Length: 260
Image 1 (cartoon, rainbow, N blue to C red):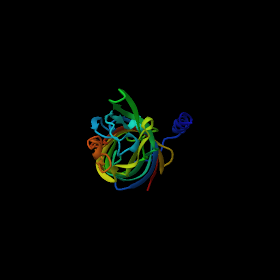
Image 2: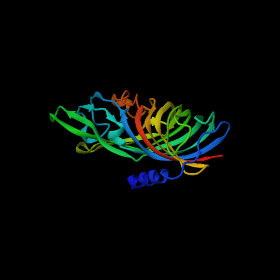
Image 3: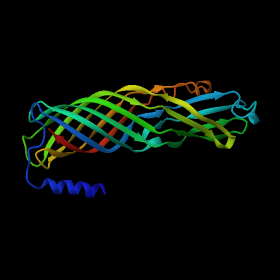
Image 4: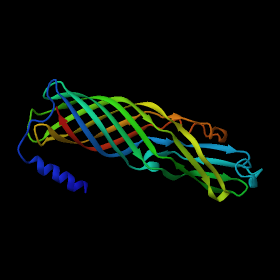
């Protein structure tokens, strides 16, 4: 479907050339959407932590010790690809450049992965530890600059840069050791909070009328570390595993633009 949509856009671009795009002193409004592919950054890091007594987690295991062996897990492993959409307000500095304010939401569904193991010396074995993390929802507010490389024509290449802040919603985690009948449900993991964010992109601008055009773009986005909440995991010696949360991703987007 995406290939057919891209083909339709390029076919329409082969028609008559129009002058839609930035113009000094003029405003524009855009609606954008696309996919966001994580390429770097962990939801949590790794740690090894001794647990002298599993009794508080399962009374049937009172007096049994274990060692938690948690491995780092990335955004890609837990959440996979995300979807992104937003709005943009632009202001033309010239026929080749503009500044803009962009509001964007990026979201992904809940994710469940094996996060490590619990080694039990009494059994000389490792028991799988699983984590289920609540959905990822981030809301970015960024200002940026975009530069076009041609004065007109059917297709105009451009590059852009953005900088601002992103608010990420609360993330909770449920940890399970099924073979030991242990569950830590709905544990706080990240607080709702703001982090520095920004991005770079390159693409093409395709005018269809004097007032309407579309953009196809790809780039790279960055969100800094999230606000960790250790209230449920610090007692297990895992307070450091969520001192992270930063995310680097590659967005692919399509944008509809109206110039005024």
